[in-house]
Length: 122
Image 1: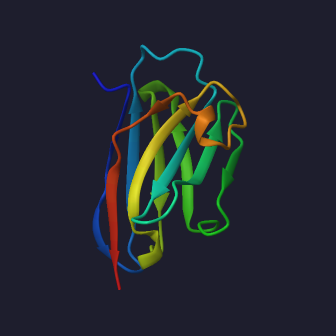
Image 2: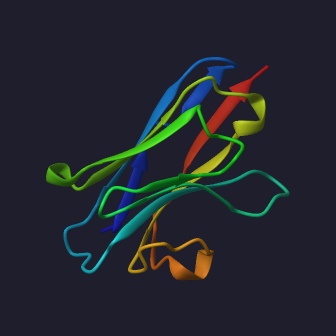
């Protein structure tokens, strides 16, 4: 069984919105930070947003003001609300979990979802 499962991706036009969800298995212990990464063809995987267990969040400059990361502890789920989508947001989006509170590097994330495709047309 997958430890992190993403959903909510799809095809939208520029300016529209999508909401991604990531549900974590309760078999995962010690997680204090979760994040959304994305990877477009020919590009490196990049950090989009991060949320710590205490609530603080961080965003890539390219998505500030447009994307919002949030969590529902009761549902063991993290969300990424994406508004005002642009063609350059097109990528596979991955959910990740870390035992480091301020993890910013890929190797600091221990668990990854399978990815969900987001495509934004011009």
